[in-house]
Length: 491
Image (cartoon, rainbow, N blue to C red):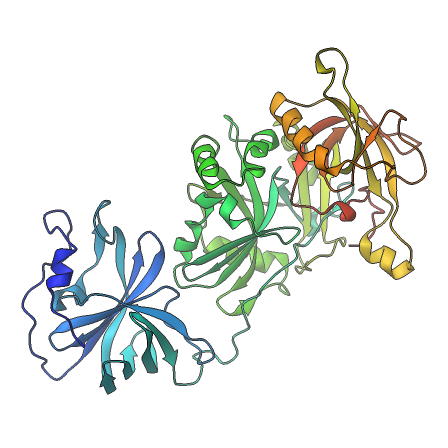
């Protein structure tokens, strides 16, 4: 099965790459060695190389060596490598074949039980990889690698397919603030980051796949290498002072074209603010108290060009709230120190304390503008539901969309154009609101868009005073929008 090293030589310019030049294949000395390289190239993957017939017979394994017999991994047969490659580690310069870092993940010896052109059965004797495995050809260069021994960790918990983010309740500062940790409330998009070997996946709080929209965050997956990790955090964009800017984030949120995303990524890069660790290497951490999850998160030291683990402070919430207001931030989040992570729930464990009233509201219509906005959108007509879908189902009654006022300020030319595009296909003849009626000049729309609005107060009649538009949110479903406050219903 071993090929000549000419294919290896043809793919490389040894004046440009530090990889060892191919030499004539040597005869076997009776002891077979192996090496597994962690190869951070265009995509992170692992290269398995087995000494045989004087060369290293090689496979690229995108998801790494499986540690459980229930899971087979793809292994792509590649060109043979010279024996000198068994000790190679370093960086292959950009522009060369396989450009990226090449690090030794594991090495050792192996015992070959069967070696045929379409099947190999062997036992690894390495530091990290040990046990009996089968490699078998499926089609062409595509092979599979299967663990034949029992799972390395039989008590391993399955990697979570989907986690609904834990929610926070809007309230005042807790009186017993020594029982709470206080974090900055980041003005961005809530996101759960799933990382498996060579396979990052990002979901918004309404469980939509947003991985392709934030390509700069893919590199975080390389930091974890072969580890399985699930994180919770907020995707933000920062202004010149290093503070989160939701307005800047708007220029990234609604892009779908790959080339447009990559162009905007250069001048408006995203930063993932990580504040929780939910799963690590086969163990769910969600039942652990906040302090233990944070300690394990900080051990990972996740601080890079596009991700950070912001600090927190136990107690003295009033001082942190005042500091956040001085910096023009939205507010803080108080998290009870002994609180487990409860997916999808809005209990008392997490409390949002805001410097300014701000919340999501559902767009149910719009009003035409006047003056320089004549013939265009002048104001959004907004509302919120009386209860959550869960509570409505429990009561056996439909949700009601309640009118909450109009929003006529805070728009830029770009957001006006975006809103007009989004609203036109949602037009409807009748009002989606129950109870109090909006202005009779309202152009009604299906209540699907969610706007983030800042305002001074709620009036006694249930409308917002002095509102200002902050942006559209795609990460929250309209039917989950209720009026925020201490008495808000459980999700």
